[in-house]
Length: 243
Image (cartoon, rainbow, N blue to C red):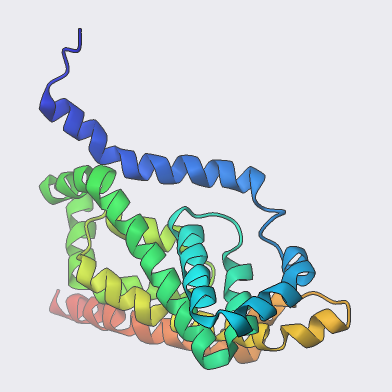
């Protein structure tokens, strides 16, 4: 007999979306890496370009849908997808589609985490005392700045920047705004690489993603990160003066 109560069943069901994402992510890490690669893109580029030219709307929908699934389930191939956006659609449209798909995928992870584990952890943080309460208060006071930092600092994995905010109870509105705006600089770089991808393939080469760490690219990103951190620093200094 099933002695579980409706409340218990609901509790487990709340964790199902995040559990599904983690399971699919784990499976995808071992099974899809070779299928979502620049080599596969090189082999199929003529067919992709032909389909784009004859069925543009369908290609846009398929691209955004596939990119959404990659991000929502944290599958390997996000960098390949971003570069492909530039290759297929150019800098302006490619960046737009990349940002749209990545943002929607990030929103999906956020809600999956918030519905289950995030709700439990956020409630515990609200009821906590001492150091944890100070961290929670500091996060609330600097939510926008912290979220922008998560997006702009290149060392923070995209999956972490999607999952962590949901687990600590940030407002979805702030998460959505900082995600949609904060990923634009990185999306521009990846899309720009994709715009010249045809010439790279013609030379028999592969995209050089080390461009992300060149001074002319990493410099502005670090500058934006410092700008996002500035309100936190100012509040901290004011607090020190107050004491």
